[in-house]
Length: 217
Length: 406
Image (cartoon, rainbow over the protein chains, first blue to last red):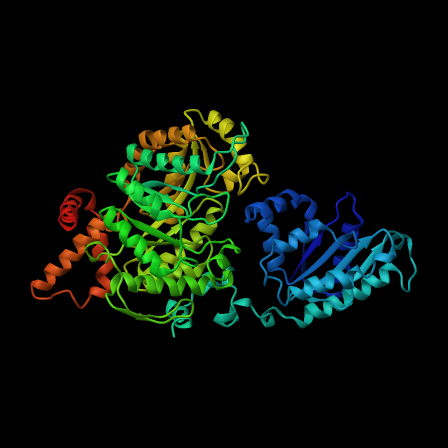
């Protein structure tokens, strides 16, 4: 079974960001053929207050933690954010900031964004792709930007639907190539590289003498 | 089991009247609070250490030295002493002198400090926080235990034939706790040495506290200091009480809403549900505190934070009255009733460690049996003596300390 987390950072209801997220999710399910796919949608609007609390207190509420776990446990993630001031929405970034630094490592991600006009479309390449590159995720080579005008464009070639289908195809290939077993868990890192603040140090404690040896001459 | 208070030492505006105490007032208030702790029958006062405004306790042993003279029974401790930015040689000296002044009523809790800019003021770098903790503590231990130390490390100039003066009182170094909210290496460090582990337990959900303590207990056993459930654990807690629960909530809410750490964030109700913060009646505080045992196991020290977020001194002293009269006596009884006989009820104290040392020396004199197992039995010897340290051994120590000071 494949589990996909679908993150929508749209603020209005109904939201074109959520619409794009659903379209991308359904197209991915289609591309995965007969495979059993479970979709888990996360609406960040509902987590706005817990996210603000998380920034101030340093820990996640149960509700937010469940959303974080959903993303971390998923085989792939579809992210869609509106474009605000030439970049992803602040709410979207707050959620990404709430994830442990290495928790998206090696995870296939399908990038999506929505905006008022096509002039924002490169936000995928200039804002979203570097962010997920930094996190060590595997952003699919094709993302989808949907401008307001795209929702009325029913052209078979080059229209929104065909772009969604192409992006879903690339994403599905990435998901297929990454069987769960090859996704290197962060826990396999050498002791020196491990992120001590994360879960790794609890599951697999290091002998204290090896820490002492590093400071003793 | 020991009960006490720990203070951050923040200078915070009282949100109900806009008044900000001066640094002088805050320092004097901390002293009054500590003296009150002894008066109401608490066992421990621990001061934080900070080197930047709005905090005042930058020189903990000065504060504790004063309190040593003003109190009789109170254990003087820290929460925390910065093992990263303090020179371990100076720490060894300061706490050694304090121990003599206080006739042994001293222990300390080591922490890293989380304020990046503080490190360079003391010639260090926050990125070295963990290695600094490891190296500095390793040296600190040697300074207290070995008379002639020749040492070389990464972070401090080497030592050749250094002897700490004064030596720890009766040759017994103060008991050490290691405090950390989320760094497993620090739990590991506490376990490795068989020292105590303290979790501040107040800013984060209990699941995080549980995880750190479980690691410490497991590794304490791994390193041969005793069973996991015999490890020495301390917990923080944060309470505000009035006779009626609603009155407590009403009075504390403005302080909560403007508190430096979580102000502007979650509601008091959410935060109280998510973390061990308890705002309510003394009975509610008793029940909540007893529930810490569900995830921390039987533990040896409970410290409450009562004097922060701009609460006026008068209110804090009232809180201490309630703690001493209505809460702690019940907790002592309830925790004792739940604790298995072979789990230490107290952390090692100066008295218990001295008694253990004498017992070991006597055993040696009687033909040396038991010396071979000393490395593993040390802490359990401490622990078993701790069990009755509240009674007989205290007296013998006082006599002994007097003898030393004469």
